[in-house]
Image (tube, rainbow, N blue to C red; front, side, top):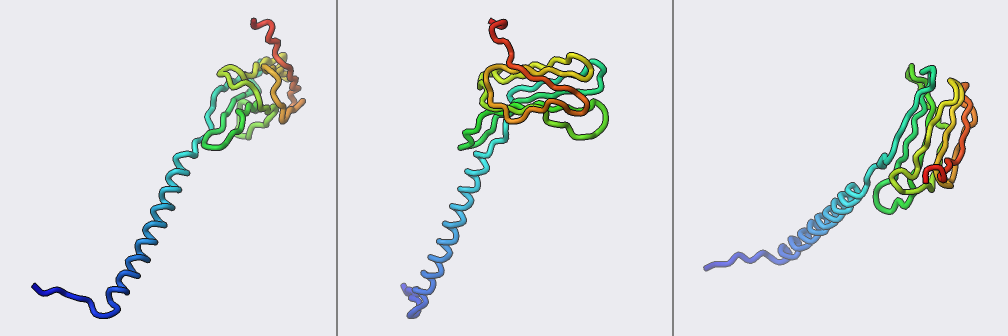
Length: 154
């Protein structure tokens, strides 16, 4: 049986080419693995609570929601925001209250929305969250905030 033997440097050249190709494939595989891991860990924020209330005259609507950040290493607390908008038209809403550090319980960060008149709204919340933003007047509506009386709920 005859055996084919490559000439002088041909075997060495083919091994170098194979090693280069193997290194490219390895790097590509690692990049793809890291990308897939990163994409699978990027979870969108999750809405854990929401509510809304229209003004007595139906002109305004207040919407509130609590969002909990998702994904690895976020470590950020849930954030509750309250927005005011007109019920008609296509204008963007205006943020009137934002806070963090509330309770992580399902009902812990809820905001009670109570319209006192067509141009006066009261927002109450549980606990002692960190208020990041609070408006006192927006679009002709007076806004008051207060901590909810938790003793009445017991």
